[in-house]
Image 1: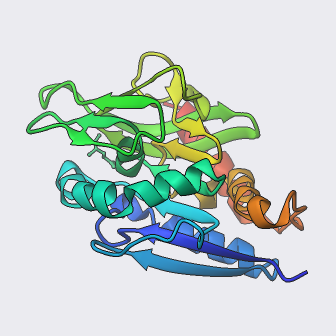
Image 2: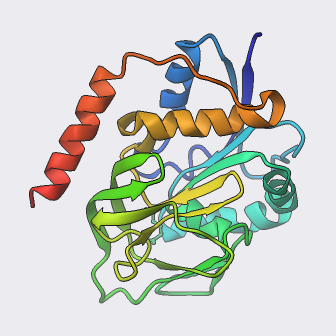
Length: 245
Ligand code: GLN
């Protein structure tokens, strides 16, 4: 069976902090190596999203300025479709600033609150520009193993009862540096603070995202193993660096 995945990449130029588009490059590689056809639609300001058309939605991180630039479009132009897609089981991966805007709201250090899509029962508040940002390497444990990445965010995210964390922090801050949670999960939507990019350094999680993207149209798909020697070496090195400080 010829498998295909259609991916909506939201605001690829504006929400691409620390090269989060590296996640797309990783997914392209992992699909191509398995003969899975991956189509990536870049959706910018003003572009509408068809909730029936996609298997996976991706949004990267962004500083407060970029988040402010996209938030009205995210809510008013794409919001209802994204919520509908997630409710119908479409997979999503939202990183950092994108993650914050997939939750209920982000209260920056300066200026008005930025509303979110409410997909994750969580909210984010920046404690003030005089408070140290959450910056550094992160190691966190998730259901499928360990995640290694890099974080740089001022906002602290607090999960409500309707969201479960993606992972538990071993090293680093994660959502807020207090409750040891990192990220959030709701249905097949995942939020995370991990840049890096996340997926190239975490091949097992990358394949988990691919299986979620395939599940809606093809059910449970067994993915052929890839030669992940380089990826696993990068993963191990990231963990060594993070835990050696
Ligand atoms: N602007 C947000 C914050 O500082 C998100 C930053 C990011 O995407 N790295 O918390």
